[in-house]
Length: 178
Image (cartoon, rainbow, N blue to C red):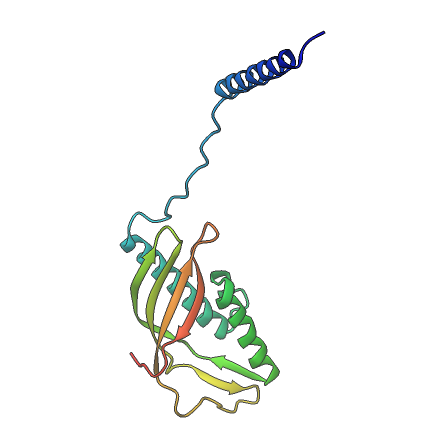
């Protein structure tokens, strides 16, 4: 009959052997493939700013086309997040009050401010000439605020959560005219 000391030595031996077998198995197992690290979508800030400007100009063209009556124009395809929500809210606001925005907005300048390449965001300042736009009722009454500035300065944030760069936010720089 095995003694207590013999049983303990056997148990320790089994544990050591099991540990060695596990170590051997782990050592023989193929190493996990490294997960791909995200790479920036742009090679430089200049490239990121140029792409953001292209997106903003396409967005502005789509807005102007939609206001001009082009039923196929879809400026929302350039929007995501808060920018898209704000656009939907503005459309509902105008619709509920029987208002429409007519005329073209013109980009005076686009200036890239920052590009967080690893975070996937770009910030820019955009100067818009809105003097050619009017807020009109469906009856043709001009409701454009008389104190509206003819040019507005916007801070615009772009992201690329999808394969394409999109406008995520746009805010008016209060009291600033460009």
